[in-house]
Image 1 (cartoon, rainbow, N blue to C red):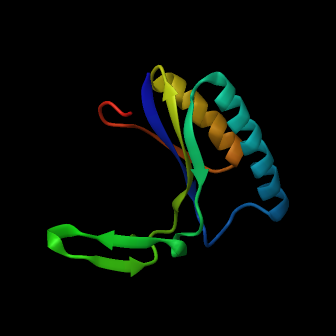
Image 2 (image 1 turned 180 degrees about the vertical axis):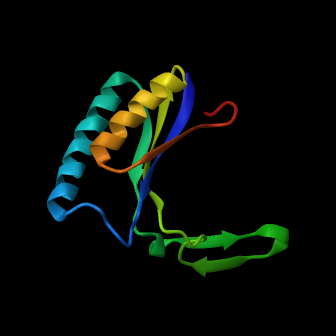
Length: 117
């Protein structure tokens, strides 16, 4: 089994869901998470706070620079994620499709490099 990261792509400053749709998304995501845990594909998942809550640490070249806020200035950022196990990319894509439908946002999927765990 290969580990995959499923990243929820979210436009924090221009939400495309109404409050009612957001609540439905939370309900559907909870149901999807329960299904994923029961299927044996679940490894770990979590939602993230707004990118403005980020702290960036840059320790390159012996420096110790800590700054507030997101590292990159982009419209869409990571809103949450799942780490799953799947037999192959086709299975992972099917799981990502269901994740996107549940959370009502695009989901990027990427395999981890090498052995994890």
